[in-house]
Amino acid sequence: MSIRLRTLSEGDLDFANQLREIAGWNQTLADWRRFISLAPDGCFIVEWNGQPAGTATTTSYGQDLAWIGMVLVHPDFRRRGLGQALLEHCIHHLREVKKIRCVKLDATPDGQPLYEKLGFTAEWSLQRWVGTGGGQTSTAPHDSLNATSAKLDQEIFAADRSDLLHSLARDGLACRVLDDGSYGLMRPGMNATYLGSSVATCAKSGTTIARELIDCAPPSPLFWDLPDANQAAIELAKSLDFEAKRDLLRMYLGDHNDAGAPARMFGLAEPGLG
Image (cartoon, rainbow, N blue to C red):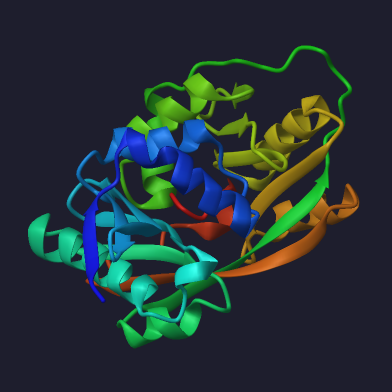
């Protein structure tokens, strides 16, 4: 029995999207293509005896921080060490080849023991909140992200991810930017509309943007991933009848440069990107 790891390419996306569907995750084919475009040499597929069996992606935000996501193994090939092989390959690629100082991921409770085994440490907790879009307006805002927004995001996220944000804004359903640089994005998903990424200078700006985006979201399921530290966003979610449906834990490996400012994160980009 042999394991082979190689770079994920456009030709693998039907298989990758099949894995995503089996897992019930929310990413679209456009999201898979974004992973590849952001890291052409950093997305991987594992084969078992020549058959595609699993995936993982990496996204680098400069030399200080990178992300691991989309770690999926087909049910027919589980319990063979393929998930661990993928993670070890991602870690080697980021830490040894690219010399990234800190690697992070958002772990499910099921995945946490493996991540801990590989040296990851808990940073802070978050939850997926699920509600319904308001559908109150026919026109969603399409502001342009600017230098002030990028600077604020870098301060709050603790890394420069401007390439990612411009890609999300370009392909999304809505983009709202305030004069203080606070912004929020919204995009389609396979199972639900997704609210994020969004950061704000203060609770007032963050809740203003969130309300506007939720009001104009399609009247269908809406996912909103929020740090537990952001009480203003959580109180808004509860007031709008959102329910916490999924627990996640942000974890890191390597030189812990900065936890960011989760209390000012009003929506994650997604668990696979940070």
